[in-house]
Image (tube, rainbow, N blue to C red; front, side, top):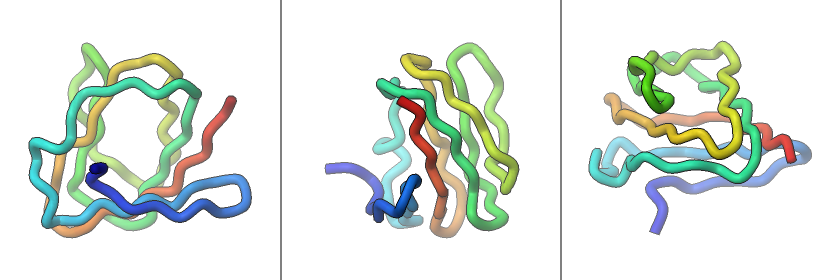
Length: 87
């Protein structure tokens, strides 16, 4: 089971992560395609790429190269992000 629910829109995905999720659910992983991620609101959740320091998610677009290890670090409140996948 995944720690989020998502809704596919025309050209992007809206993904929602609950504040009730366990921090243990947010594991290092890789995706098979490039992605651009943007937080839909102010948040204290963080994002971390492999071998980099965590950074706070923001309304600025964040590029995640395919096959690059990364993870979310849980903050307070729910998190809603918009994701564009580039195949």
